Image 1 (spheres, rainbow, N blue to C red):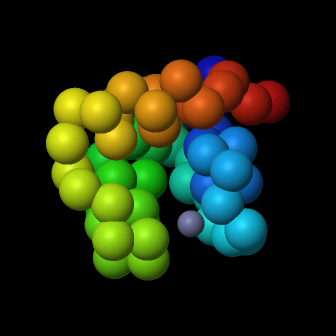
Image 2: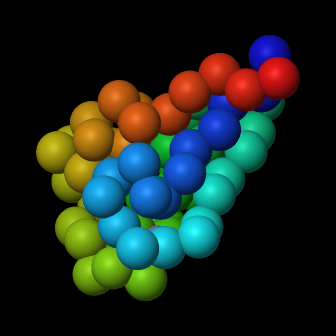
Length: 58
Ligand SMILES: [Zn+2]
């Protein structure tokens, strides 16, 4: 089942969302977005937050 991440789940006022078949792929896209749009570091901490906010969608 596909995974989905919504940036608002990180508490951002942002409409970005990422969907992919694997969690790894969603996290990769979301980290890229967090870096370029929110100046967040591509750190383990950021990945952890994103992973926690990533949900299985249907
Ligand atoms: Zn965002």
